[in-house]
Amino acid sequence: MKRMMRYFLLLTVLSVSVETALAQVQNYKELHQVKRKETIFGIARENGITIDELIKANPEMNTPGYELKKGDYIKIPFPSKTSQTSQTTPASQPSQPVAPSNKDLRQREIRVGVMLPLNDKTTDGKRMLEYYRGVLMACDSLRAIGISIDVHAWNVSEESDITKVLSDPNAANRDLIIGPYYTKQLKTLGDYALARDIKVFVPFINYSQEIYNNYNLFQAHQNQNQLNDAYVQRFYERFKDCHPVLIDCNDSTSTKGSFTTALRRRLEQNGIQYSITNLRSSEAQFRKAFSMSQRNVVILNTSRSQELNVAFAKLNGMVMNTPGMLISMFGYTEWLMYNRQHLDNFYKFDVYVPSTYYMNPLSPRSDRIKLKYRWNFHQDMQNYNQRYAVAGFDHAFFMLKGLHMYGSHFTGAAGMVGYTPLQTPLHFERIGNGGLQNRAVLFVHYTNDNKVETINF
Image 1 (cartoon, rainbow, N blue to C red):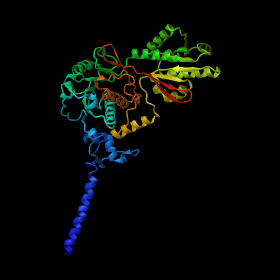
Image 2 (image 1 turned 30 degrees about the horizontal axis):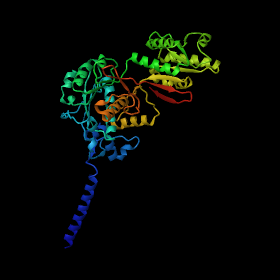
Image 3 (image 1 turned 90 degrees about the horizontal axis):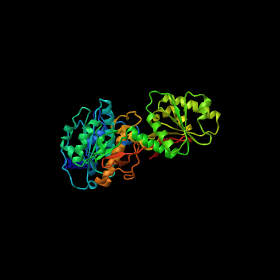
Image 4 (image 1 turned 90 degrees about the vertical axis):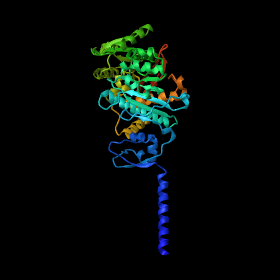
């Protein structure tokens, strides 16, 4: 009798233990042992969940400095409905094609394709792989607010026959294709997309005749002539009451003549008097080019750091001997690479740098996306002035949220999406009966009170 009682008690204990274990397991699908080179992003993708869902199931991942290590055990949660979508990387097996749906794009999953060189062997491939990772991070952020997205990617190198890529049935059911990277592939892809009413977002090609012919193209980059026109217009609007001073820097390699020529033409058309001087001029001659009754706006005809350094030395010497003189400077996008070595002078001389991108390094949003990238991919973004992952995030978030909000009527016009970019502003205008061209530009302004502001246009 006592033996039977012991068995009964043992079975009771075992039953309670099993029930407790089952209750614990029900909170997540399985325990996963981390393998070598696995990443948070890769584990989430393989299990059909979002990065945020994986981190929520494993709160220790939110600890600053957390690193995923081989041999660690992590919980794999059950996927939510919004995260049960397909993400096929170039190295993955292609998923089965999804049958086209006539349901309004605003009420169904958005299908996006990425056709870029995605590899870690070439410079283009490494940059676009980082860009693609930014696209995936944007998709995860959009899923977190209830927007369902299916992603399929193709590795389209410069040597790729894009017609073979487009023969994949998965290409035909996309709502949006991001790519290509190479101009020679754009007509084939554009014609294919136009015939199937697929929108094409062209992230880095800055000139192609296709933009004038293809209604479905969104071209993000602007060529230098377009940028010069935009910068001259914005310069005129901001500094029309100032006195421009153009400084010849004796740089025979400079490519900035097209900008300074266009600027001088605009100033002359509007009756604005300007002065021209030279870095090699004597102090007295140099001083004569400046006004004491108006704010002076200095424009160099080169973007090189060494001439900028000489110009700052010359300007500092002049203002020391001329109290009360007001000076601002208007520079070039390349100056963003020099802001560390010249930062004090940027503040002192009220520098404006025209650009199509800028990410404030002190912004909490900048810190968060860099940290998330590190968590997801176990490496930092490449140290380019323009962060490709952030461009990918901005581009994808803007386009996919716009398609979700407006469906096929989305044109990317200013104010449609209401998205504040991390780095890369977008607003599109249609070119005649052709495609849509991004017209967004900005000024990075280093103010006299040691602040940096971004002025978007």
